[in-house]
Image (tube, rainbow, N blue to C red; front, side, top):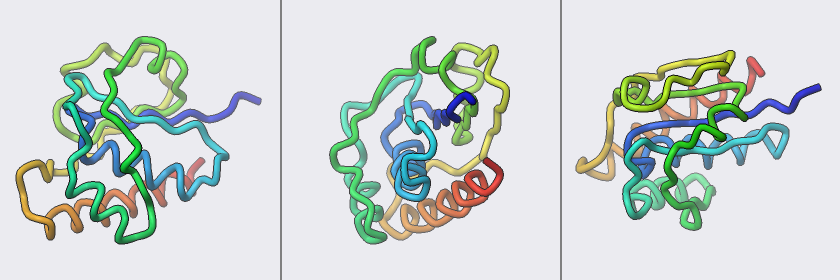
Length: 133
């Protein structure tokens, strides 16, 4: 049986998709392949994203923004857009059987409280996703 592979995507791959990747890796215990990427990756993961993830015991400080590739798309069984227009800005994930847009507001440039709220929304959505898988 093919191993399930989830790709979380957004434009900069510096906040939401990085948090989703970290949470999914933590909660799935390696049962699924999990990665994140962006259409125009930033240079670093946002420090507030790293901080709020550490608050729940997940270290994403080693993660780096990555560019979405055709290989990533073709290897994915699930494509999750964070809701920033990435589906319009990236190669159409043809062949990916499960595509979702979570429509989560971008915390970039907002305060730490907004990052915490965003993290908690993402955590709930990842938990629901993993239950379905």
